[in-house]
Amino acid sequence: MNKSVRIGLLALLPLSAAALVAASAPRALLPAMGGLWEVSQRADGHGAQRVCVPSPVLLAQYEHRNGRCTRTVIRDSGSQAEITYTCADGGFGQSKVTLLTPRTMRIDTQGISGNLPFHYQLHARRIGDCAR
Image (cartoon, rainbow, N blue to C red; front, side, top):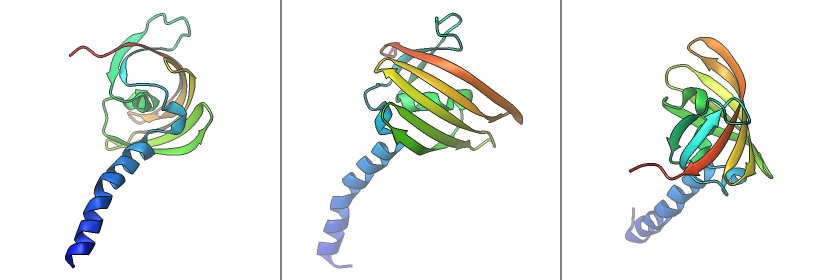
């Protein structure tokens, strides 16, 4: 490989990395930020759990939030994104995430976890930055 081809390929590396990051976060969720989120099955926030996530797209795999999963955005339109994911432990799911405001989301999720089906709706509210 000649020097100019190597330089050209090296110049594409940052662009490729940026494209991968952008591809993993649907446009619909770009106004939201990672941080500390309260997640509840009730819209009033009763019984909420606090979770720290670097990106709000990870809330789409809430059932498998501690798993090693790969995500695929199958629909990204307006304020809604539909995401499927598959995890290393065999679990998988599909979630429809609706961004209500940059700090609130509704997540309809279903799939298989621990060889059992799940299906529920979550309400997530960003409450601040994660503790350091």
